[in-house]
Image (tube, rainbow, N blue to C red; front, side, top):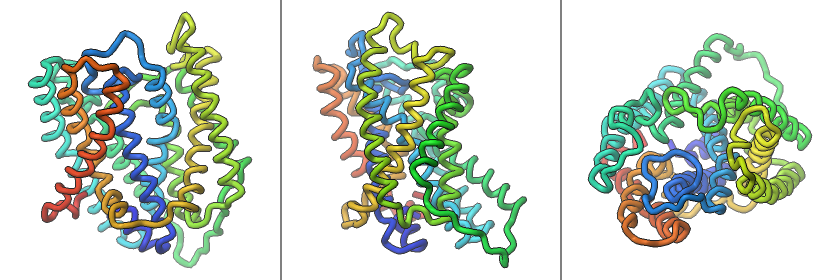
Amino acid sequence: MTVAEAADKKSGPRLLYIDSIRILLICLVIATHCSITYGGPGAWYFTDPGNGSTTPFILFVIDSLNQSFFMGFFVLVSAYFVVGSLQRKGRDRFTRDRLVRLGIPLLVWVLLINPLILLIILNGTGTLPMPPATFLNPLTGAGLGPMWFVFFLLVATFVYLLWTGLFRTEPHVKVKSHPFPGFASIVALGLLLGIVTAVVRIFLPIGSMWLFGFQLPFFPQYIAAFIIGIYAAQNNWFDDIPSRVGKTCAIAALFLIAVQPVFIHLITNSSSGPALFIGGLQWQAVFYAFWEQMAGVMIITGMLWLFSQWFNRQGPVARAMAGDSYTVYIIHPVILILLAIALAGFALPQLTKFAVVLPLAICFSFLLAHLIRAIPGVKSVL
């Protein structure tokens, strides 16, 4: 079920703007992976062999800004529609549906897509970022790649099912509805997430990876986003976002976004470089954790309000793109890697290749996803 379909069944066309957000978020996912391909910070299957020894500043800014909110936003939106889906379908049907829509793509990735990526890289450049056995092993994280997110949703959803099974509310008991949080509450959430994230990164700095590709330094936000998404759905927060709160958060987000390049410039040009803010007991790491989490909650809230006001409509193209976005998330690594390998032999600046490959990767990923979902029976899964 697409978000648009879920919105129609939950509260009418008012939530069509969520589809627009999902389209933007999947484009940001592709942008982040494309950025890493051409020298941005992070780990990816393929990096252009012509990359220089330094990371282009703009790619560093793009990755850092995206990481502050985009996957947490994905988790929030995904969790929001869990409540309504469970209520409509019942526990048994909902459980089967989650296993199909999340489990089957995971199996397809592990058994088909990830080995295909390995073959593409071996035939394209012959250089793998790790041994083939590690590359194919889902336990190490490399074998799941970006599908760690789908696996996390599967785990989080079943934890929620277990919770609701243990603490079921009696049908006759009316639960008091809570209004959308005020700006002070959102600031408090950002501060709390900043504290937890800073503490986690003392022991697990950015870059630390656990089983299944879980990057625990970012997980405080993801876990909080899932819980908040469930709570928001129970109180219909996405139906009517107060303009005063939304505008204030949007302004705060713009300020935090303006601060980020200055901070990154100062750090990357220092003697110790980015190592200063990835974790540990140093003020740069603590400041970055607070900036990241505060920026994340402000950007997410500001975008929810902005899109609900200006993008709460949907034409046929947007409807198709929204329906295809989950498939795009799954297949975009193949498209991106093929394009990057095709341009690997050209002596072009990193930013030029990034500017060429990114729009092509987005267009071809959506086109291929649409063709895949046109195959009979596929839409029941994707």
